[in-house]
Length: 147
Length: 251
Image (cartoon, rainbow over the protein chains, first blue to last red):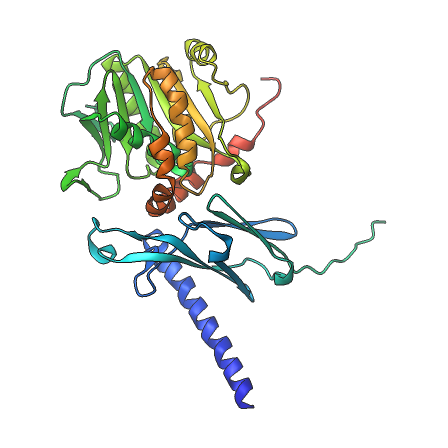
């Protein structure tokens, strides 16, 4: 195995382990899981995945995001990664606990897509703070003859 | 208070006057009811008059301006009583909450219940000004809605918290209308809440300036993310899919 190949495999394993941790966290915490990451100073936005016959439609609520240029959408395998910069930071100074005195200025959300997709066919629109991403499913079609 | 054996009880810390209107906004679709009712309380500088409680509610106490408050509270001003909840009501408790609330309103001699909420529409992203549809329980309620130029639901199902409140009002013949704005299902929707409040102002005959709510829309959406996430399981349990179902044709 060459050095390049080793690092590629290592990166794949790292991504897979991260994904498993995220899924485990979701399972254990459910609605109690915090919707922020203090170390990255980012908030987790609300998002919804809708599966249609030939495509997956993901919507993400991004208040305080003004411009399309401030949104970064990446698809890596079945992971959809959304990052966005807010036009102003948000603080929760009146709340107790870890929120206190931390200001958040970005959103970050990683969504595990329910099916394999064709990233090259993905489209996105951004309207009044709502991001909508449409990604075609990777489908192999067979015609069944009816006798 | 509630009736003996009730899961919920209502405590009046100040005497609620009879003859007024009870406006209820509970966390549900797009948090429309909760946002609009809480905005109404703030905007009209209403006075806290009581609360509703149950051992079955989540074990929480809410603090506002250093002061502990009950999660389900009632406020009053000028004959309008507003009931708000800061916790989603588990679907299994909703019938009991509806019974206690409507029973209390009937005993207090309140003239009508107005339930505020949202009706989820898949193309909400393309809607600039959400429309509001009214549901009238008794003949007089539907007449009132029509007189005020509010579109009345003709056919279809209602599902969830406001359906149970309307059902209890129908059973007891208590006047009740539900005002439902086109809204997002899974995102806090202050735009829909503003639309509901504009319609409500015609019913209670009090002007409500919704401009500050619309100006703070983004702040509301950011800050209510967690409450929305907690509300979604309740919304899922309340079989909202019925609202896309056609009822029997010959009934």
